[in-house]
Image 1 (cartoon, helix red, strand yellow):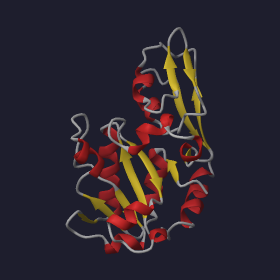
Image 2 (cartoon, helix red, strand yellow):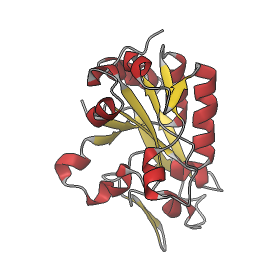
Image 3 (cartoon, helix red, strand yellow):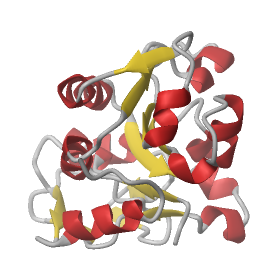
Length: 211
């Protein structure tokens, strides 16, 4: 299974509602360490799974599903992209125990986070960061006004705008950021009705998120 998956917001909402343990960091370590001036420092990662119970309260606290939903809404409004994965380094620096008991939900910006480097990574590493299965990006060319907002929103370099809109599916994480920024609704994220359940099944091999 790929290590990291970009999630549309609706999928993450439903995953949170089915999670037993949720820990929210009080800050984003990437943006703080980089001195980010474009995005809020206080919108930190979420962590799911029993490992969340072992994270120190010095960096955040356990929260309810309702609080977690409010948090990801704030992240979305700020223009951040949600990427979920099992990251061994998180379990080490957070001292949360076995790495398969912790699932990280990062809210990433294009200027400070690891995922900004996706287009520059080797194929072996870049291929570990994938779109969610059962989700696709649809374009309605007749509605597109070539304003370029989608290109500005995409930090993997998957979209280019010139005389026409060009979409490189090989680079696209289908995170939905371009669709949210499109003023004409010319880009849409389409999810298979069973996509959420399939995503949950994939996550359950990492941590038990079922309440």
